[in-house]
Image (tube, rainbow, N blue to C red; front, side, top):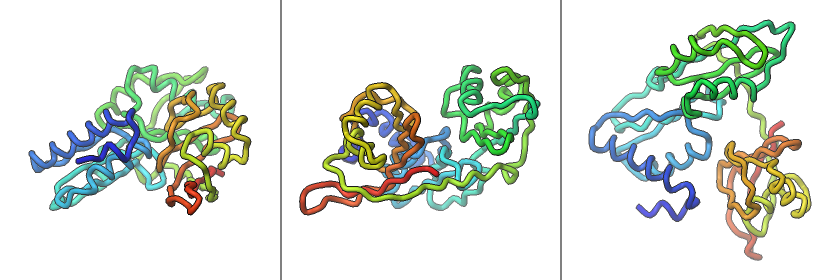
Length: 257
C-alpha cells in the first residue's frame, strides 16, 4: 500500500500505527478501538481503512459535533453502537459565581495528572458550564484525582452522554487560490494578510497546526488541518479542489465564528 505519498513524512509513524490496527482486525476478526484522535488523524485512519472492502471504520466523540473522536475499526459484519466507543462524560462543579475557568486551565490540569492527550476528548465550555470527555478506562482515576483547576477546588459529576453540551462548530467557508500549500501561503490567503505578516506570526510561535506549534513557514498543509492563530482564532482547511490552468491550488477553508 503506497499510502505514504499522500501524507507528510512526519505522519508516517501514525500511518504505520493505523496500518497495524487494520492488520489486527484482519487477523483476529475482532474490532480495534483507538484513543481520541484529532481531525487530521481521523482523516488518515479513514484513508488507510477506506480502501478495504471487508473492514469498516466509525468515529464518535460523545456528540456528533465534537472534534476529537475515537475510531472503531471493525469487520464489516459487526453492528456498531455508541456504547462500543466506551466514552465517559464529566461535568466540572465549582463556584461559578466567583471564579472563571478557561479551556487551557482545564486541559493543563488534566495533563498534569500524567495521562496522555489521547485519553481526553473535547473540552466543552458554555455559559459557565464545563464538561469534558475521557476514555472509560481512565474515568475512575480522573474522578478521584482531579480536585483542582487553576485556583478553583472542583468536583466531578458523571453524566449520561445525552446530557453533553452541544457546541455548534460554525465555520464560515471561503474559497481561495494559492500558489502552494505552504503554511504561510495558506494562512495569508485565509486571513487576508501579506505573506510577510503570516511568516512573522509563524516565526513568533503564534501558529499551531493540529494543536502543535509550527515554526516552519514552508510546512505543507493538508485536508482537515486545524490551524490556530493566536489573536486571529481558528481556521480549517476543508478541502483541496485541485489546480487551476495557471497551476495554482484551489482550496476551501473555514474560519470559526
